Length: 72
Image (cartoon, rainbow, N blue to C red):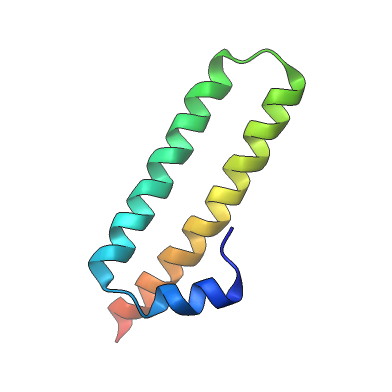
């Protein structure tokens, strides 16, 4: 998960970098969702869900930055 300091650093990056980063986060989420389909262990499922939520929050933060750059 990105910290506030990390988010400030990311905001200064090239927009292309941010789109690549968002795309990578989205792909990682997809991998976790695929893993979830076949996993039976409740502890592993909980870990997958926690990681997927963390990625979703990070992706939302990056997309908010990108949305702001589109408004400028």
